[in-house]
Length: 109
Image (cartoon, rainbow, N blue to C red):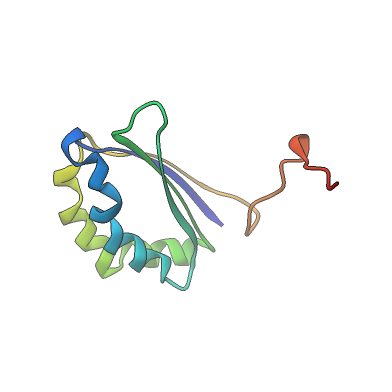
């Protein structure tokens, strides 16, 4: 799978509205056949920073995402709300889902 983590620093005046601002893009991406997940989290340390964790089943799905109409629209509509260019880590991982973190296994009672 293609595994991507990106940090978005939003202008402070728009930080509380970011989930709504990015909602259309988020919903459209989650609807892509090759999208495994597309999840936003807000930083505990910096409320103007959002972390996006996303995964696509393979390179073909990743290419389809970047070439989609909603991605192209987001390239125009989202940057005016950002304080800086997002930072990204993009890698290919030989799996299709999350693995269990065995070092913190939960024992059933």
